[in-house]
Each structure stands twice: as C-alpha cells, then as structure tokens.
Amino acid sequence: MESRDREISDRREAANRWKEIAEMETGLSPLDTPAGRARSDACVQVRLFLPLPNLVFDGMTKAEIKDALTILVRKLELDSTDVMWSLHKGSPGSGKNRHDQNLHLHISYRPRNDEGHKHRICIRREVISLREALGGWLQERGYPIDWKSVSRPGKRRHISPEKIAMAERGEPLHSPEEQLQADLTLAKRLVAKLTREEARRILLELLRSEEASFSRLEEEMASQGWSISRTRRGKRDTWILKDESGKELALRRILNCKEDEVHRLFMALQARNAEKAPSKKLSEIPLQLGEDDAEIEQAELKESTPEISRN
Image (cartoon, rainbow, N blue to C red):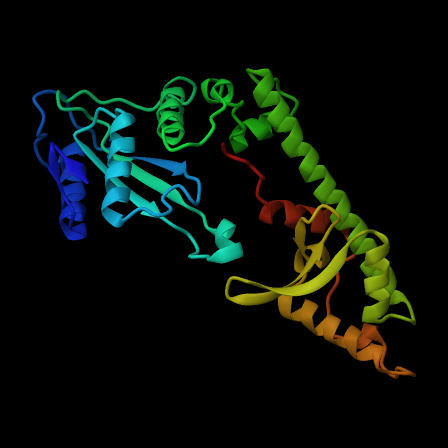
C-alpha cells in the first residue's frame, strides 16, 4: 500500500490507515488534505478488479513480481492519496491444470487526491484509460492486444430491478440498451416459469400413476432433456432439476413443499424401483401438494430473484 508517498507493507498498519481514512471521510476527524469536505455517507474506498494471464509472472521472483505490479498500478494514474493492491492466484494448479488458476489483481484506492478533490470512475470514459494502461503493460510482456476492443468497451449489461419492473408493467425505458436487457431478463423468467409448470405437471401425473417409480421419473425427465439429482447447496442437500440449458431449479419450489418432504418422496420412489409388487401407494406418503397453480406461482415469484449480469 502506498499512502502519500509512504509504503505500507504491514497488514495491520494498512488496516489502521483505512480506519483513519474512513473517519476523515465521514466527518469523525479532520481531513488530512488542504481542501475538501466530509460527508456522513461518503465513499471511502473504490475497488477495481483486473484479471491477468495465468502465466504472466512465470519465472519471476517475488521481488520482480512486486516491482512489475507497482509499475502497473502507477500506470493507472489513479490520482489518489492512498492506493493498495493485492495479487490473488486462485487455485495453485500445476502441469496440465495450470489453466485452472484465476490470477487477478485487486486494487483499492481512496477517491480523493492530494489537493483534497474527490473523483469517481466513469464507466463509459475513464475505464477506457484503465484498459489502455493494462493493455500497454501486457504488451510490454509479449501479449498481443486488440487495441480496437480496448478503446471500445462493450455495452453495459447491468439493469436495476426497478427498471425490470417498469418494463414488466409496459412502461418505456430511457435507452434501447436498457430495454433490450429488460426484455432478455423477462424472457428468461418466462422460460423458467414454463419449465416449472411443465415439470410440476409431469411430477403430479407420475405420482397419480400406479407405475410410479424413480426410474420412470428419470425417463420422463430425460425425454424433456432434463435431469434430477440431489446436490449440496450451502449447508444442506437439495433436490434439483437441471434443464437442457444447464439452469438448476429447486424441486421444493416446483412442488411448493419443504425440502425434507421432497426427500421422503424421492426416497419412496427409489424404493419402488426394487419392488416387484409395490404394496404401498404413494398417496400414503405424508406430502402435501397443493393443486392451486395460482398460489404456487405467487409463492415462487416471492422467492425468486431477477437474473442480472454485470460487466
């Protein structure tokens, strides 16, 4: 970390420096710059994420890597009193697995210069200069750079939930880019809804059948290009349906019941695979399945979250 031409290598000292900056920017202590003012909701730190080629530092010592990254950060010309960076290597990887690494650089800086003026990163303008600095740094190390794509960043892909709701109500958005992204998001939601409805229909029809079994369920799902499996999600195992595009849907939401009830149901279906003459009907399993599609659809919409991709 560089703080007013002073290098800070100790993590605790760097953390204490950021605490001091936070107090100054939010008005809890006087600013250390000749001009500027503090705000209770001030921005204290801006963070950048720079992906790097996994093999860019091959054969270099730690000191050489540090010098090279220091040169890169200075090329960015962030105009800040305090700049901190850290290199993350991802998974170690070796031999053929070296491409599994995720080498990237985190840069954190204070959005205030030595004179006390605050500034922000403009997505459409200043990011181009950052890309050019990174491209030049990589070109010096033998990497070919497509300068046309560097100077022309792609269209923004982020859209807020509020604007998606506006598009859903039929209200026009301000730009064609936002309208396109909103339409894509609503189309994805519709596809997911249709998939849930069709999967629910197949499951209920199978449960009413006298030949219900897990193998029969797998056959029905495979005919749609889907698959059912139990996988680990966070601290619990859950049954999921994976559609032909690879999107995963929780079966507890499709059936509108608890995870342990879904698990008992599929355990009973798997047990029927081994039975030649099943004596117990699946209707005897304590699973409450509502038949009101409107209520289920409303419950799913409350739990669902919009899919937004960020650039």
